[in-house]
Image (cartoon, rainbow, N blue to C red; front, side):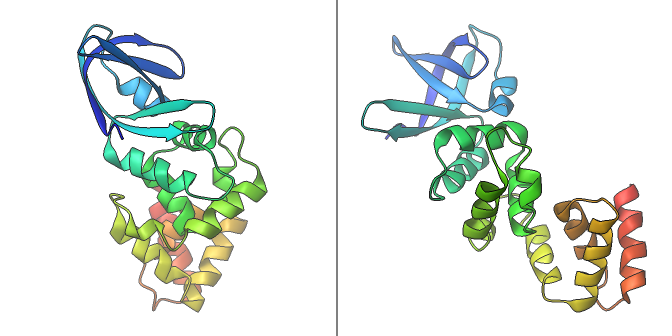
Length: 198
């Protein structure tokens, strides 16, 4: 398994890049987020990699940070989700956004990624909801708080009201999770709207 590459960036296009290490060029398929963070051609570069072995090909995927690589591995662990979908999701969203969408049950936001339909997004959320807080995603405290919203009646009612006002499930969940859960439904909504307007 090739875990990382450190060498000279010799080629980039809209979906991949090549790093030359010891005279050998390694082509890595990458997310738009990673591609946009690469230095100019000819510069030294360090990337984390994930190797995917299939019957007819061996593909290398490159990432600028371990959180993106771990999120990619988590997404592709879902039955029926291949590397192409993992790259599409992480091209549109950061690992933190993906984790928040999954933790809050916001499958609708995931459908904005190319090739992700409603059923596939629901399967991703369903299969990863329990796993996402165990990964190395940077705002674990927010994820725990979002999880607690599900267990509180007033918070759930406020969440439903915010979603009906047009906020996404994940935006509303995060805002509600930052309020005092002992507040009334109206107070939670008021505080959440203040948070959302910032």
